[in-house]
Amino acid sequence: MTRRPGHHSTIELERYEAKYLVDPACVPEIREFIAPFCEPDDHAMGALPEYVVTTLQLDTPDLALYSAKEHEAFARFKLRIRTYGLDGRCPVFLEIKRKIKGVIVKSRATIPAELWGGDLVTAPGRWVPFRTAQEEMNYLNFVRVAREIGARPVMLLRYHREAYLGRNDRYARLTFDRRLCYHPTREWTLWPERARWYVLDTATLLGRPRSMVILELKTFSDAPLWMVDLTERFDLQRIGFSKYFAAMRTESLYRGAMYSAAGENCTVW
Image 1 (cartoon, rainbow, N blue to C red):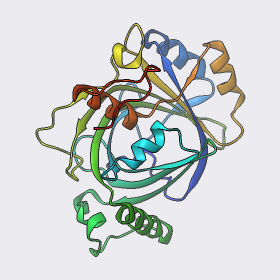
Image 2 (image 1 turned 30 degrees about the horizontal axis):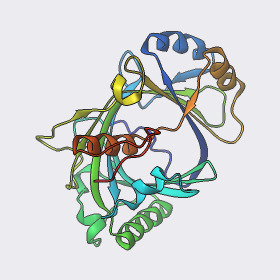
Image 3 (image 1 turned 135 degrees about the vertical axis):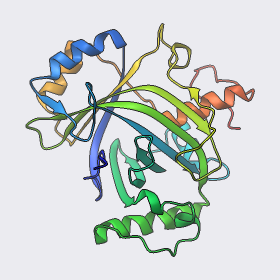
């Protein structure tokens, strides 16, 4: 049976997210700290509960969604198409991820891997066996938004995610993301045959003395006490980090753009 990380998130989910850069040498100690409060995500496999995430980011011809992040728009959203694993067997998830006043609202629709194709967005009409009416509504809304703004593929992102769930919490997740890479694309495929992947989590790109791991905490409005203790115990400093934004910035540098004096913005290619 193919595992489906995060398959429960088919309806709109409101949550808070916080990201931190962590030295890889600290990860074992953090694992030990959370052991009494967390258990491995049962959708992950291996000695460490990991899975590979591949995300196709969509944007407008003038990169309006990228620019909204660059300018820290009050309310913004992402259109992304995601799958898990590398064998092409896991379903494809169409997601709209909104950020409003710091709250994340995500809707998701599930497409069987064998049915996936860009025409489901650009020229909808093929039958898809959605599991619920809500998923079908999420799909139709994704298509509507994508078509209204003229969204098309811009960037593929791929990384390894180590994931844990709070044992006794209504909703609490902790993840470590590592081996981040990206591939500029104009294709709708999530499994390119001859893609050239560029490393995204280097020390230089992260502005740190060494490559770091991205630790992410996700919860509803009331964070469990163990999360609060975790951030204090390891002196975690929250950062604003978007993998898509970082990939676009990095690619623009390769194309000759310049960072601003603050090192945050760059010319859009």
